[in-house]
Image 1 (cartoon, rainbow, N blue to C red):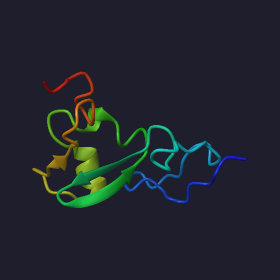
Image 2 (tube, rainbow, N blue to C red; image 1 turned 90 degrees about the vertical axis):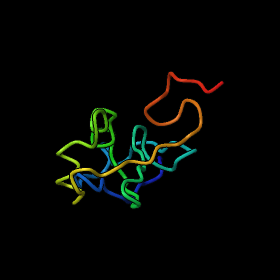
Image 3 (cartoon, one colour; image 1 turned 180 degrees about the horizontal axis):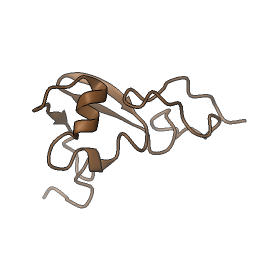
Image 4 (cartoon, helix red, strand yellow; image 1 turned 30 degrees about the vertical axis):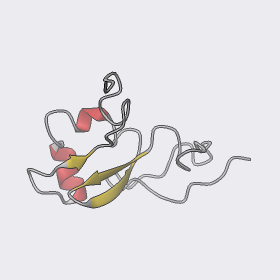
Length: 92
């Protein structure tokens, strides 16, 4: 039986679907779920709310409203190659 993930998405307030979804061993979260650091705060986001679409061109209005973020909030992304939004870029 898959392990239970007892958190909900900080933006949409929904639990994983299905609730018994298997957890990714490296993160301890369901597949697609991410932790994003925005304006110095950490947020656990589901596969929909944590999608790259909400971060292109700045943090989406949806996330700003649901997470209580200011208009010009900044997201901190990992510097390692292939991390975050720059999966196809490789540092030389």
